[in-house]
Image 1 (cartoon, helix red, strand yellow):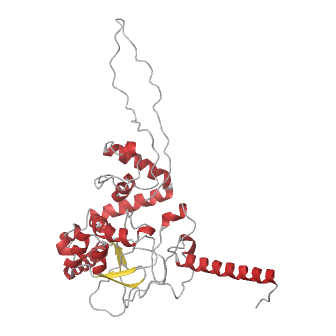
Image 2 (cartoon, rainbow, N blue to C red):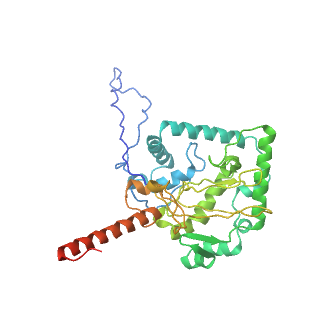
Image 3 (cartoon, rainbow, N blue to C red):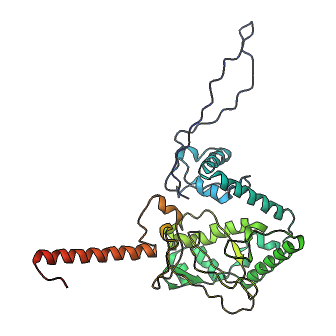
Length: 354
């Protein structure tokens, strides 16, 4: 997350002089709570990659704990060594300023919805709720992450199209348990007649994994196993600063959703995992990177890769290094410029224009 903004300093008003008794001694009174001051309170535009942020998993807030850890890297130097509580309060104020009231209300309602589920739902496979690398991942993937080099990642990947990488990652047993857990959650939802929130507005079937307790596991999956890869292959579109996730399962079938049309994911990096027992179909198509300006543009047949970086629009206008439509428009402008220059030259030389 890259945020550039200043937070107002708020100083306590001067306190009145305490009354004195007849012998000239001051009357003892509790010290008024004063807000600590920390010099420059402007956020860094670029994160301090050398700073190791604290964890905020136990923090009571409507915001994802990972957001606080990510935002901490942007704090001014004067605040990096203050108590965690002071940093958390400072960051809460920042988030509250930039998140509209309606959005804060929506987030709070979703949090209450999730708490209702977590207070009554009984997991089927409790071992899913904490990362166990040897049980979750195949050995080749674990070795690649441990080595953490471009070569180690390339050794387990293929790149069918520019920017799209495929690789084996999960143990079959993990996939089976995850499917069982989703099915168990859906049975519980139907039994207690609980209205479930679907992953998005396009799918009528499926579930958000965080809603029934997998948030902490998915956070660790992102931080320790996805971020090392995204930093290498998707750094220019935000892969180096991932700070939140939206983990979900969607279901397709004869009597359920049968397809999902072209869309642009609201994320910097997408990890697609194919889960299922016996089925046919399930093809996945990638048709181009899009900046915010071209989210709803028609797809071009020559472009086949994905993702979008939401924060760049604040600081940059040209996204032709990664947005397929921007690249096409830039080539068209260059072609028109060459044509105009050629015409001007021919006219000046008195030549004929063909």
